Image (cartoon, rainbow, N blue to C red):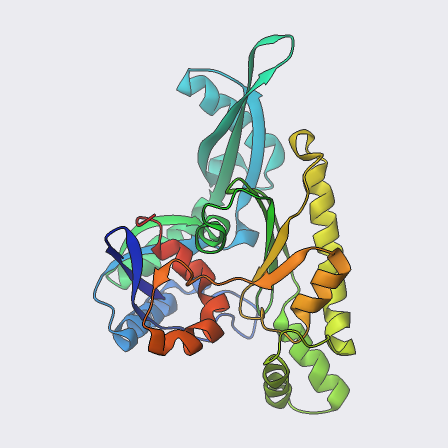
Length: 328
């Protein structure tokens, strides 16, 4: 949770708080119990001293349908809506009536030998059942849910900003890693895989024959130096992520308008961003400028808090991007 204020057009940090709790023992998300989410929201708001009840929340990338569509240009909103829905019906795994659809025009592309050309439209769809859980949780917490948006858009806002180059955001969480390829500030491709830092902790514990708590502390101690070479256990953990990155880049380049695209940088974020050797390993393997992103870069923060904020920044990247929604 992050509270930002708009100070002459720039975001200013007011307060923040977080909870380590995210998944139950059965692997279900907290949203399966909206009352529990509401209680946690109230607790975090009280703990941080938040002054506002207005909130923007993020939809998990693995639960949201996203696609960049190329559709015949039309000035008729109803016709465009019908074309979007027809494509979503073909591509989405969830039936159209069960989705809430949002679309935004990216640009218009002239097409040879065709008078109208095509319009690129970015479409996102979220299951109505998922959205209703968010609405219920915030209503129970007596908070005003101003908007819901995908984590991908929030990450672009906090980590990419106005950079128009082709970038991959690699969000390495505890149980999942999300990949987002961004071009000209638009998240054109998103993927989510069930690989996260908790798997590495478990591997360390098993190999070293120590407790999970001890393995987590060992992982944190090793993470102090991002330039350090990745230990073998970390390399084994990163290899499938590397494979997924290469696959995602290949999928991106298979899109006609991105065939010549060059990945210029990889921005790492998420609670597991400071894994030992991750920056060096991925940078060397992919030959791409790779670094841990700074979501506080365009936020005014107290200098005395900077060391702490730099350490926890990656886990706040989504929250900061959401809070910046109505500021930038």
